[in-house]
Amino acid sequence: MTIVTESAQRTTSALDAYFRSRLDVEFAVGGDLCASPGFFTFGGAVCYGRVAGVVPAAEPGLDLPDVTVQARVTPGQVTLPFDFAEVVANLRFERYLPGAGHEGLGSSAAVRTVYYLLRPLLTLGLRKRLQRIKLRDWQRIKFPSWPVDTSVDRLAARVLAHAIESSGAGAVPFVWFWPDGANGAAIVTHDVESPAGLAFCGQLMDLDDEARLKASFQLVPEARYQTTPAAFDALRQRGFEGNIHDLNHDGHLFRSHGQFVERAARIGEYARQFGARGFRSACMYRNQVWLEALTVAYDMSVPNVAHMEPQRGGCCTVLPYFVGGLVELPLTTVQDYSLFHILGEYSIELWKKQIDAILDSHGLITILSHPDYLIEPEARRVYRALLAHVRRVCDERNVWHALPGDVARWWRQRAAMTLVRRGDSWAIEGDGSSRAQIAYATTENGQLRFSMQPAVGAIATR
Image (cartoon, rainbow, N blue to C red; front, side, top):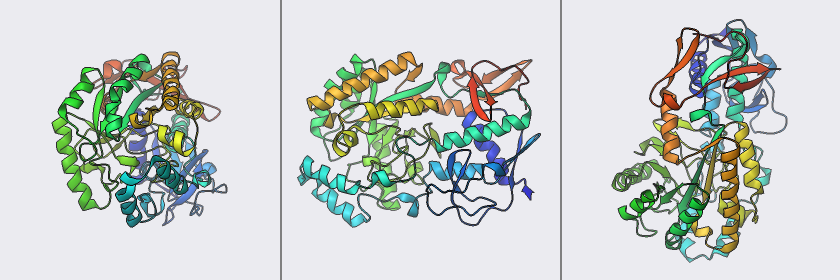
């Protein structure tokens, strides 16, 4: 039984939101969806949600049911055995995790409380040992896929490919992901954890400037060190950006909803006082359902893959997305602390591998390093090599380097842009459209291909 329902309408809206496209195709859900969500695959992407025709797996693994062949493509209609919008939301918002995945260091709040009470007394060596114990099972995690997971992006591409086939068009126009036709985007960010790290910020800005890579610095407003408007002004005067990093970095921002709302109000006050537009929580702790209480423009607290974080999970996309009214800029590469002190690696090979994978999906490269951990010469040497590589990637592969605030602003503008038909061609309307590029999606052997030039054949209209 094919059902054209509200969920099918959501599929159209979600696909249009992802690509900012014009699709003259109707979507439908084929069959009755199962009552409980689970894992399955579609077009090579791991999915989590309710599905028709199979029993989804309770846990991710190698033998997930594949529902690719259950998709039906007919002229003007694509029938899917699942709710595309639901699956995308489940992945982005980490709903596939047991208990929503919002645990802290250890399985209980009590363990986390004790750890953060003792943390100021622990040597770096002891902290590293405890964290390695906590993260020792990271290689056994089956989902998301390490070191970069693009499940959302691959799923969207496969569904759009079916839509193109259904439309009978040679190509479908859409608003390209990045301004000026850039192949991807890159941001450099620094979380400042201690007085020593704060004192090193000037030298770190010098390193970034040598590579012509301006960065954002996230400063803790309470308890850790003295944070003043002058510190934010000093960053901006050099062309850098200042954001809010947690409230006091005690690990308890998300301990309860009531406490989060109270702290979010104080975070908002600091953001206004310091002229900050962005936020990142301590240790990438998060509860995406609560983030809307933050009165900032964008957030950077959600990892793409969180194998190396105390709170596991990941949003499974390398592109920004909206959490209510916030733009979420996901962390898409490994942190310097995790690389140096958990994995014990002092090279940029993992970063290079992640960057290549991110650009395969035209995504956002997010670099997160800490001035606190770049003071030592060996770490600083590796960081210099990373900056040189990112600079080279930006220059040679047409990657847009920007501050996080600029990326969030662009993503908000792109979300409001529309494609309009003008005679025999297309145009983009909306704020920021002068930098927007029309791209064309085509299919080749069932795979999606992108081009900045229209393909030979009809262009889908609506």
